[in-house]
Structures are given as structure tokens and as C-alpha cells.
Amino acid sequence: MPALLLPVLHTSTAPVDLMRAWHLDPPLTALLVTAAAAYLIAWYVAPRHGRRRVSRWRVLAYLAGLEVIAVALMGPPDHGNGARFSVHMVQHTLLMLVAPPLLVLGQPGRVILRGLPAGSLRWFAQQHQVRSLLAVSTQPAVVFLAATVPFVLWHYPPLYEAAVRDPLVHELEHLTFFLGSLLFWVTLAEALPAHCRLRATAKILLTFAVWMATDLVCAAVTLAPRPLYRVYEEAAALWGFDPLADQRLGGAIMWVAGGGLYAAVLVGLLVRSTRPERRTVRLSRGARAPERLLFPLAALGLALVPLAFLRYGVVGSAFGAPAAMVDRLREDPSVFEQRVSTFVTMYQVGEYEGVPIVAPPPGVEVYLVGRVDGWYPVLELQEGVQYRLLVSASDVPHALSVDLGAERLTVRVVPGDVAVVPLRPERAGTYEIRCTELCGPSFREMTGRIIVTE
Image (cartoon, rainbow, N blue to C red):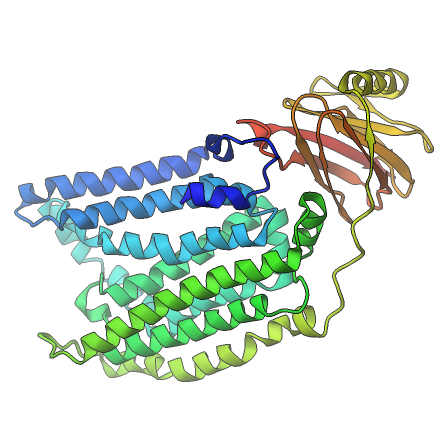
């Protein structure tokens, strides 16, 4: 899978080592390793408590699900999601349509319970609050909302933009996608106590409703006449691709993958419903009430989903102003470094973590150079003043990306190439510069700062 994704990532023209597109997330790594260890230990000790182990293929499915999460959140899709919509949709596909079904096939709940000592298992069985919570959370209406509402809301352009620009919001987006999808697949797979399981008819209706609601979002994105997300229009100017074509490719990825999977599951449920059941689980009258709400909820979702995109996809004006024009000059990297040094010597006003802070007066050319250890120097600019920024790289290709509040600046530079960018900061604050190029194993730590004063 990672090898297939590499060609669509925004890499430089030189060959890029695949491992450089990976990064280590210590909390996520610890969580995945803990989940794998707990599962394997419980599976191994189950016979000691007189209980059967689940099949080995289920163990492999569970571990594969954890691996898919690692690929999605620490591999190439996580690096490319801020530059290409299609790569971001690959990441969402892995988190919603690949990892959750694999985890559910591993039956982690059953494995953990079978690995518990008799005393712990009795204590768990006495927790009626847990049983009540499971009964409520697996009602069709709850599952439908959990599986579709995050999908609809997070693809609404303002919320999507916030997720791409803010790492914490992005993590929240992925968490809601994953948990909602996990609840859906857990409910369909009957990996729950008997009193929480749905009838075959409810499963069929639930699958069809989720399929249609998510399909409408995918259709709205794929068939939109203009790009919906400004962040990818900015990236297109940097990397030289068609943002609308990329958006349609991303929408088609989700549309085809989701539609194919839901259709296959629906056919399987229909075939299974025609067979005589060995055991019939009847829901109480109180539990059937939310099930009857599934039809109006599904209809409401189907009616409202396109409305969320009307302003941005059909009748709305294009996002903001076009990206600033960038002129290009050719200059030897050593000569540019000398100009940067002179610039720092003339206008340095302080230091930040050992890096000079430079405050040039209005009308003076502003210099910035990208190195593998960071962007140099720290710039202190005045709000509302027009500057002429000259930025280049001294070692390997880099891509400057900084959100200045009112605008987002993205510039790709290579050694020997100087980008000349008109810059007018409109909002005071301290803004972090990132590198969005695969410039080395620690590209995520390559940062810098622009300070805008009133």
C-alpha cells in the first residue's frame, strides 16, 4: 500500500526514499503496541482458563487492522494529506473502511474476555451500566448518526479547512471518523452480547442508510464544478497540479471504495437473511422505538447532506483571492547565504533559541533561507507593511508553509533558486513556519518563525 501511494505524494524531482515519508508518533505507537500486546496475551492464556481461542486468521486480521492505522497516521498518507485531497481521502479510507472491519474481524472483545480470570470475568458481568451503555449505543439510530454525522460535518469546507490547518482539530476529525466507523462495523458483525444484537432487517436498513448518506457526500465532492477547499488550491500553485482534478480523484476514491464495500456487505446480509436462523434474538418493545426512527433520520440525512455543499460547490463564489505570484531568480547558494548573513548583521534585534531575530525597516528586502535544521533567521515584520521576501534553500529542496492568519503562504524552493514573494502581513501575532517537503527524516521538526508586530 505505501509503495502505491508514493507516486501521488508531493515529492521532489529527485528519487525519494520511502522511509523518509514516515514519522514516529510516540503516543500512538505506545497505544498500538499496547493494544496488540493485550490482545495477544489474552489469546494465549485463554486455554488456561478453560476457554477456546479464536481462529488464527482472526488474530492476523486484528494485527493487520492495527498496522493499517499505523500506515494511515504515521506513513505517507499523513504527510501528503495537507498537500493533496486525494491522498487525504486515501487516509480516510484506511481509517474508516479498512482498519475498523479488520479489527472487528479479530473479535477483540471476545478475546479479552476469554483471557480474563474467572473472578474478573464475574465482576465484569455484574457491571450493568456497561451492558446498558452497549444496548443504547448499538441502537440503529445511534449507529447511523455516529457513522454519518462526522463524515458529513468534517467534509463541510470550513470545518475541513480547520482540520487541515490545526493538528489538534485534525486528530479530533480522525478520532470521530474511526470511532463512528468502528461502532458501525461492531454492530454489523454481532461482536456484542446477545441483547445488543440487531435483527437482519435492521442491519440491512442501517447499511443502506449509511451507504446512501456517505455516497451523497462523495458525489457532492466529486461532481462539484469548482474546488471546495482553499488549502488545496494553495498547494496546487506550489506543486503544479490541477486542484479540481485532484478533488475529483479523491472523491472518486471514497465513492468507489465505500460504495463497493457497502454493496458487498449489503448483498451478504441479504443472502444471510434468506437462510433459516438457528437462534432468534427478540428486541424488547422499548428497544424497537429507536429502530423505527431510522427511516426518518436516514431521509433527513439524505435531504440535508447536499445543502451543506450548495454554497461552496454550486452557487458560492470561489474561495478568497488567487495565490500571490512568485517570481524566480537564479543565484548560487553560497552567494545567497552571504546576502542572508549581511541582512542579519544589519538588522538583528535579538535571539530566539539561538536563532537571530531580524527586524528590517519598511522598504528593505527580507531574506529567509531553508536548512535541514530550520528556517533562518526569525523575521520580525510590521503589520500592514508591504515587504519583498526572498527565500531559498541552502542544502536540499524545501517548501515553506506558514499561516499568517489572514493568508497562507506556501513557497517551494531548491538550492540555486530564489523565490521572490510579495508579502503584506495583516494580523499581529507569532506564526510558525513549517517545511512540507520530504527533505529528510526530521522534516517535521524543521521549523521557523515570523513575528508580526503592530
